[in-house]
Length: 400
Image 1 (tube, one colour):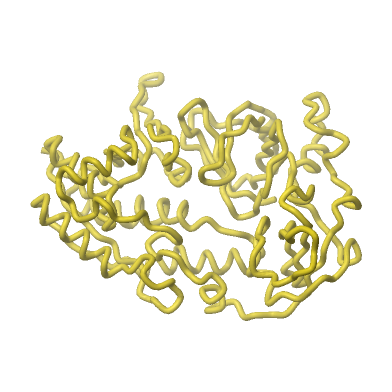
Image 2 (cartoon, rainbow, N blue to C red):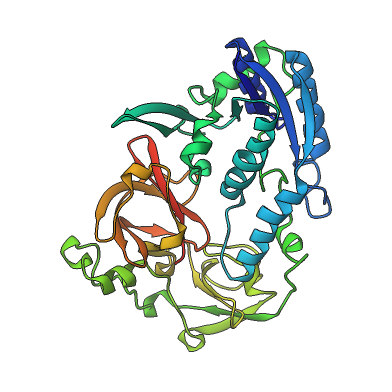
């Protein structure tokens, strides 16, 4: 009998995953990961770990499976929280959920499971895994979940073949509605529980207070860039494939806008450029404009945030992005692009974003992704992921 350690989070998805595995004949062990101790920055009642732990225990008792809690807060702080602080300080916006899966669930947690004699680890992610044989070698595919509204393959975009080999996703072929129905039928305490939100294993946080643990407030200027005066570097070129072969055009299309202080007018003050991210609307406390202000760029070195009026401000849109060569990750290593090669894929730059047609250009310095249509809110520090049909092929940290 194969042994599976399930990451019981105290939510309905992992609860049903454990039930389905047991019904399929696996030896199932439930494991709850405690990764956070500081409740001072969390919004009350949103994701209290004690309640989650208790719900996980009740599910394990109902399913009659062994259960234990493991404290991974040290690893979580070192690999996720410290990384978040350093990224925000550098003016980038990290994605802790992607990192949590790569560094905690399918690394530290996986190692713990293997030490318990497990053959696999299982989670409640809405995605699927398939195995194919290519030239006599086993290849593991990460596929989108059946429920397109809940597909979470993006959050696993940094996994490696060895990690995927050991992973099981029991609810990947189910919809959220079906998962809740199973939980109700089995009288699981989590059947009606709301989905957790916010940081992985932390819940919703008061982000300014969270960041102020390490990043001190620093007053700076808010500058508004008039949309009519904005000179778009990609306005002339568009996405003419005959022109994109020019490396300079690739760089122009895929690098973030750079503004100078005298490009616009000062409209207010902020408490620190490192607290803001591209596309952000709230937190600037500037009124009196015909349309709301949105952050279109940040300059942490000079402590300035650049804004534009309206959600359709041209400063929020551009055709491409760039990933440094050391940050390119291929889940399907056999499909790795060599320098000078290009390939069309469907891409997304954030969770839940519809897939968009794009061309990947592999150059000496990294990977350029040029979309057929302008994309809103391309944000350094986030992850771009590319797909072929339903399969996630690779990903990378957006540099610019």
